[in-house]
Length: 219
Ligand code: SAM
Figure 1 (cartoon, protein in one colour):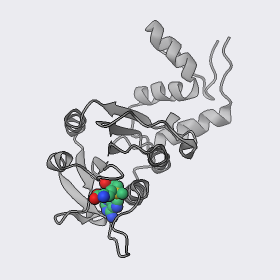
Figure 2 (tube, helix red, strand yellow; figure 1 turned 90 degrees about the vertical axis):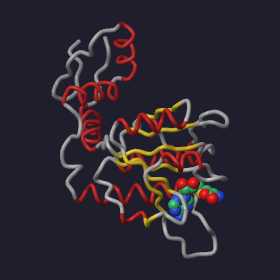
Figure 3 (spheres, protein in one colour; figure 1 turned 180 degrees about the horizontal axis):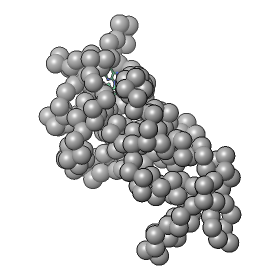
Figure 4 (cartoon, helix red, strand yellow; figure 1 turned 135 degrees about the horizontal axis):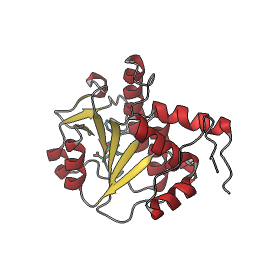
């Protein structure tokens, strides 16, 4: 017999999921340092980003550090074998790709309409967004830098841009209603509330059982 999740936790999970934005995401290109990767995922959680994408051509996917504060459980993270695969997948989902990159043709990040499906591409700590990626994206964007140092830490740049996207989406009412189809929402909610049980049902190829009003299992 499985123990039911507490009603308060269930309602919190449901409210957070109802605010998740399926059409706002990030693509991290070789962002290797665990604290940067973790900080970006934590920001995604805070902004309401449902899924994040990464490509690691050099080395392994970074481990999560304490900086993530467990946010990796609530952001769906996809790693892709290469850049082209990631970009093609995102473009098929109608995303416009914005590379955070200081080039001459980059536009101020505040001029973009992030209420449309938007993917922010962020580059490696040392090298920035690659030339290869720059050929695949739709637009370069920059955060104005008025100091002595030429760039921000990658997780800070991600936060600045994602919170502008959140500001626009709040104003447009995007957080006021659930962005998922009800059956998809219920599936994810079950996975969030009962991760081990969800895995067991998946392995058995069985559909998840319906939950009660307060998330209780009808054992
Ligand atoms: N030397 C690298 C370069 O030339 O791009 C610096 C990389 S920076 C530390 C890491 C990432 O943060 C960049 O690839 C970019 O995605 C983002 N970034 C940092 N500062 C930025 C800014 N002012 N505008 C846009 N993106 C920025």
